[in-house]
Length: 425
Image (cartoon, rainbow, N blue to C red; front, side, top):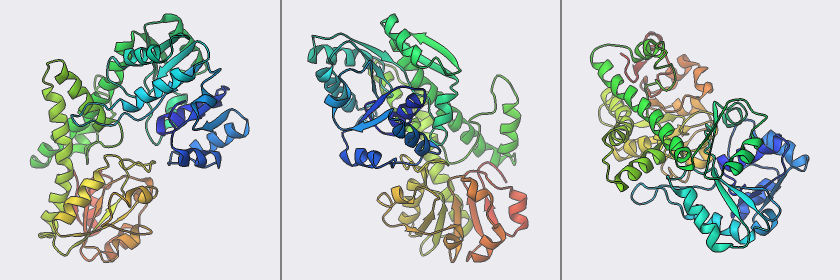
């Protein structure tokens, strides 16, 4: 498993839990040292226990050396980062480097499996790279996109909706499929280009649902409709379903923002203008400004005000700050002259270097103490259980802007809050 990030480490741990012997290779020596010391480098519920169990059983090994991990392996999974490039396209430099290093250390026939989210045609790129670097040993390249959600990645691996395997080589696809035999979910074997496209299309569609609901929410506010009720009614239609219909601050994280941009760039590369995808990105960007505007609506000028952020990570049950709405919101508040404080159960250490001007508090009550208002950014379960009367008593002004529609508007007003939500009045 080349790459010890969210996808690589989770996949390696789960494959080990299924009884496989797995080497995890990462070029970051500090990360490998952490893993060898029994510590995982990010927060994912349950993952520490699975890594510990399989390390003790001798099925998981960690190294920076391809020479130690690749010879004798039957499969080499590539699970490296494919960050956004200058034009929105995926940067494949880490994929190329991984493919070249794998090729140089192959000792026999090998199946190379792309787990990274990559543009259509990357499987061919990997195949060409391997042939250029190693003409002695054959290699088959397979696309096996991941569909893991941060915060529930173990469950998503062990109880998948579907397992997608794409390849030019049917025998190689069948061998990869055997790795997943113990798992439920539909196995779908396709050509390699369709498998690569399925990942991008899935993420872009989910992002589109989110942006669509945020646009509907803006209209709902103007006509005195309640977006929570609207989304519930929509979700009862079996053609629509109830998932990804929540209005709020929009999407973030490592996948949706990057993958929507990358699919847009792919379309443009082939002479197509993807108008819908561009609108999805525009709406998502504007949602971060919406909650800052709501704070201004309640408080007037932001200059000299202290605003607290409840939550920093892009979603609950992760410490991931990539494309987190909190970063944009904090910077907009600071640009308006406000002082910003924040609390998050898991993400504050990752947030510190991104938000050096923000003050970090030990709990939600310390955050509220003396603040002029709060913005709920991440819907952690902890925030559902807050003593809201105590929160109100600690605030200088009882302003709470709920960016995730976590609370009931009537209850909040009954408690005396000046309360604003998204698509609710």
